[in-house]
Image (tube, rainbow, N blue to C red):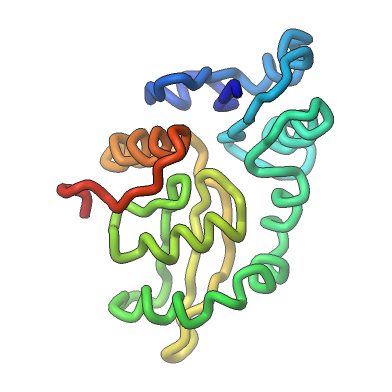
Length: 190
């Protein structure tokens, strides 16, 4: 199966992943060669998934071509709705409270790279959110109300917005995902 990472600009994903092609979104949308390929997994890492953006159309066209996009078009629509995100994740309340119990700030962002977090203490929550939301690089925003935390929103992390200190980890997590391995964080990742 061919694996494509689709980004707005290939410079946005300067990270090398073995066996994965990086494709500009406009090329994926307009080049007929991509339409003739079968058994393709499309990992949409565009800057935005909003309606009528390149990211939205990449997932929509991938589905129409019979490719397997991540995220799917209906997932993109679900992520736009705070109510839908809350509905999808309401079964994670205990895990959210347990995982974020030591966080002192009112607001907290969790960057997730194919189901993994740079902080291993959030790996279980990251895996569950990735499994439920089916978005390759989501950023989950949590808010505290009293002693209770809830998900305020989820939005994609654009490939170009991966912090430099997370890039090596992002390559590792992405590579493991493509190779079908789901392991604990290697030593040295905090």
